[in-house]
Amino acid sequence: MSSFAFLSNNAFMKVAPADAAMPYAVAGVAWDGCVTNRPGARFGPRAIREASHMLCDGVHPHFDATPEGRLTDLGDLVLPNTSLEGMRAAMGALVDRMVRAHHMAWLGGDHSITLPLLRAYKAWLGRPLAVIHFDAHCDTWEDHFGEPSGHGTWVYEAIQEGLVVRECFTQFGIRSAGLREAREYVADQGGQIFSARQLRGLDGPAQLQPLLQRVRERLAAHGNPPLYLSLDIDCLDPAFAPGTGTPEPGGMTTNQVLTILEELADLPFVGMDCVEVAPPYDHAELTSYAAASFVWTYLCGRVAADTRGPR
Image 1 (cartoon, one colour):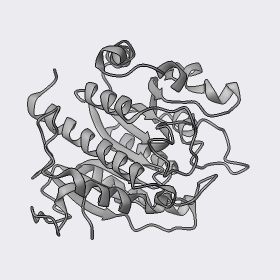
Image 2 (cartoon, one colour):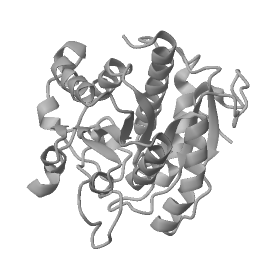
Image 3 (cartoon, rainbow, N blue to C red):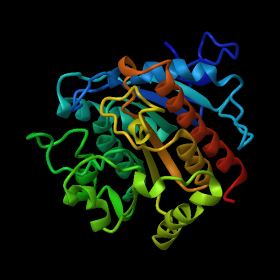
Image 4 (cartoon, rainbow, N blue to C red):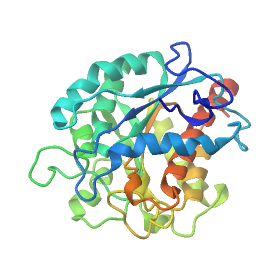
């Protein structure tokens, strides 16, 4: 199998996959049975892994840290591929075991995988989670084109099920068409939304700092609950990520996403996913490279935070 980053069996470091002793792990969830436009995200985990081989020795230039020697790749989950409920039910036991053994980064797959992941984290931690959600779409619809659940309903379902702390749910990059009730649902529930329009022209730590401070203040006001990151690659403008199922013009830049990941790396993250990478529509692997860089940056930030403690 192909392993994440420089840890492939064929890479020069020769680190074995599925190493139970490693504190960090990645795993693929190759499911795209809930896409509403273009399919192909089931091939995302493979493409992200292949792109990650460009990360050389894996030492992050901002954190001066690397997951080398701490990271393993658990491969793709073996799941049914024709039933959403079957897939989510099968994920349960697999995910529960993994989150208890490793700090996980999940490679999607479409965004419907995030709901069972949040269920597993809440069951493990015994409390709702804070969430940082990058996306072009609000994912707060009450149904999925007539079906009760899908990749556009997981935020609504997570809030309704009490999986998340409503006031600590933050969205970045939202810009797609939709009724006001869906677009503003997170804010109406007490969370906060930084739309793509609000983010225009903001680049770098200094310009983004007021927004990031608001994230920190929300978390602190609620006792810094465990934090989950869900990163839909279509938060990026299609110029940076053409390889996705539902591209939306007017999105974020890779610099903006990387800055936010770097500046918030000391927060109490417990896991992350990167979803909706659809290689059939990619150009020159731009989308896969961005996704690999985001996952790597997250992992390096975790290593740095765990090693040095909070800033």
